Amino acid sequence: MNIKRKSIPSPEGQQQLESLRQAISKTLEKKCRLGHYAVTWKDGKPVITGEDAPITTKISAKHKPHEP
Image 1 (cartoon, rainbow, N blue to C red):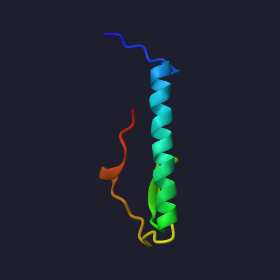
Image 2 (image 1 turned 90 degrees about the vertical axis):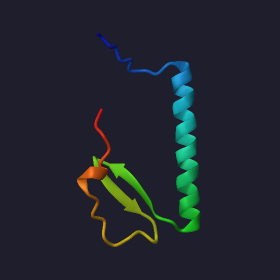
Image 3 (image 1 turned 60 degrees about the vertical axis):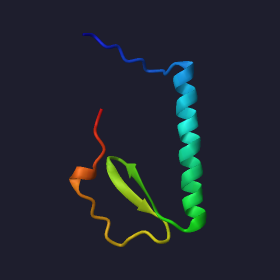
């Protein structure tokens, strides 16, 4: 089976991605306003941001996202 992966999503896929980006942005903004911390990924590692972020940032390998 040969699967070709497009580098540019279809118009429907672009709309879905934009919807997800907006939802994530809204959620992170809400967390910031409420003073909650957020965990995001940067350069393959978890990054914890926010005023109430825990001091210990040790996250086990089993919580890493799957690589495509």
